[in-house]
Image 1 (cartoon, rainbow, N blue to C red):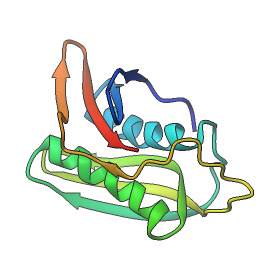
Image 2 (cartoon, rainbow, N blue to C red):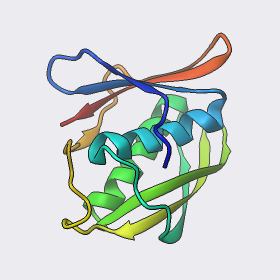
Image 3 (cartoon, one colour):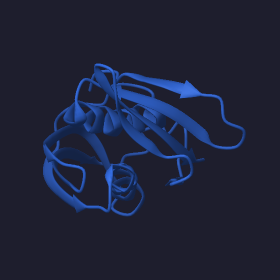
Length: 140
């Protein structure tokens, strides 16, 4: 997993981040990588089991929250660490991705930032001049 293109933002209580991508696919891939990088702070091994994820949403903002929440759920609910992310298709209302996961092992996976939830507060996914950007606030 390469370090994704993101910037931490000043925020009073939670963790706020601005994520960038060359296009919408790149933005959603970077957002998944950013979440894992914030939690584990290092590159994770790329091996693991493949898992397909398909999501529907009301708009791009909702899709981003659902996407990151799904990755967080895999860790919290299924005890699986996402090691790689591949967006196969993304539109403003749908996302189809393939991720690789490994079982969470506290001996190998030290959680640096415990993220409890992805919030809708000030969520923004927008096309900028020459790239896409997302502002995401996470409850820690």
